[in-house]
Length: 367
Image 1 (spheres, rainbow, N blue to C red):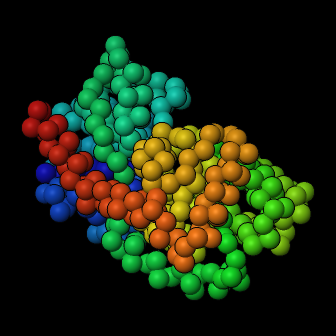
Image 2 (cartoon, one colour):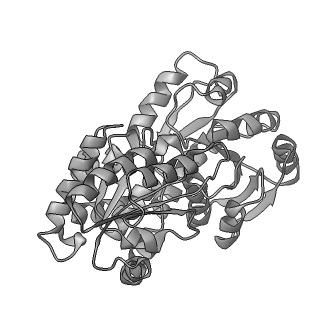
């Protein structure tokens, strides 16, 4: 089976990393994949690293149409509603089933409304709450179609092996004898960096051992003055020697491994690749009760959950983890962290490839 993967973006984001992992896993399940992206960037490199042929085209609708004419193609899989907008017409004209893989919780964004008028073979959703949300949105529309649970995946075994980088990363930070709490996410007001810094200010007043890092850059180009605002908060709360704003990090794994507590403070999260990566590395995770984090952390049995936009609740959850850490020699000795590491194995990239291949095969067989 031959499948065309399409993404309008090539940024260093979770959706793009997930797509590259999927491209690397599909051949093991009988799917030959090639890719089209709408701009140069990290995703192009990631496709090449997993052996997936990729082309860059500014005019994606035209490039999709030409690709479907020039190459045998059994199905098209795009990332997000924006991806489906540029593939659906060409796929329909070529009588090729077109599906899309969601990277966001549906909330009526313009692209999500526009695709409701387009034929859609299937939607692949990253978590059970998102499956249900998308089904509600589709009811009675032209795009009404099956919605399948296909969680993004990572190479869990390879990532788990990188936990040995923890010690070196802590030394590099100069905080090997401290308790390091970090948030790793692209800069975005929905990612909760402001709430995290406010929580850090409260925590710093009560525990001198704590140090904090915020890593992530302006990926999408619509972050405004958020970076300046975060720097202002660090100065206002006098956290200069306790909290570091690291900006974009090409390889965040050593930093993730260095953390004693990994925080996801998002307001919306359809899945949460950084949460899964921290689970795999054996780092305790504190996260807000978003659709994705609640799913990954199994309702809190595999991590610590707190309410959205609640600085006090975030402080309490981190404080609880720190107290638990005082009773063990290694974070992986905590029961919830042990459970998280076991649970993370269910989200291996190979499993994602298996699920996606099964969905695509049903679509092709029905054509």
